[in-house]
Image 1: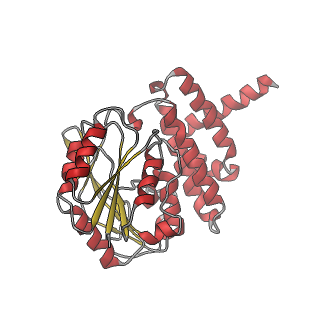
Image 2: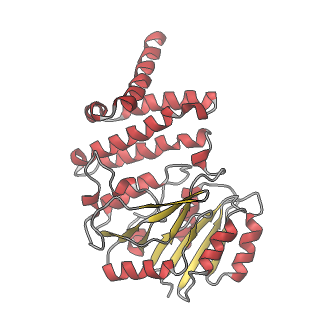
Image 3: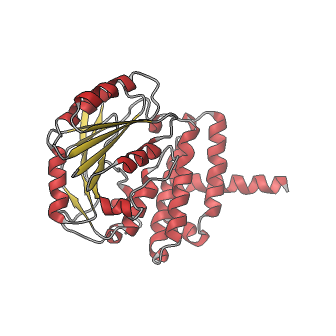
Length: 326
């Protein structure tokens, strides 16, 4: 019986994959499996993974014939996973020795659907600890209770799939899978669904995941059209939350987060190519129009002046363009 399945997508990370795989070797156990998903890499990553398949105990190598993105690669891993519990790691991050056995012990002790953990962010030589924005530790709770309040950072804003461990029953219920084809913000609809539909969770203070920030090949560093998938991701959050029995309570949080992310991208619009920047403005205007307008008005009135002004400019420009066209 496989106790833990670790799903690790790789795409063109030959510079970092050896460290990732070395850290997995320091976390092996007879009842662990490591599902290495090569998302159609075009550099030296496939050769590194072929060697890992032979040398890493519990390794299962899966290759994509076409690049599908992180969400699709994770779903491939979920389909292959045989473990009672599942967790994730990205192909350019790494782990402390013996971390996975500790993480597994935590969820077994707590007996809940999923557990969220802190992590260490690595930016160059700098290290900083980032904690789950949830005050109660080692206490099993209803995940819904960790979504609000709307005006503070909460557990749904800590959207890192690799910062936790998940019971297989979430796979069986269709809760753990990611939205196919999302190129960025893939963790956002996922974390919201997890908190709306799972029955129990806990946050623990384990530190063992090292998240490599600022990787040049990461989509968060590249201003191309794939970055605009955040709109598709948050549209899904709004649509699914609007169907929730507690939509009136939860929608202000969802809309506020969507607006904050949109304002962030609009504030850095100069890093996009001109055609992508135009698309960002037009897609943002259309997204603002799709949001529940009463909730949007309250959210924008409560936001800081700078971010609210960015969003209002986009809305006015869209209205003006429609008037001219008419």
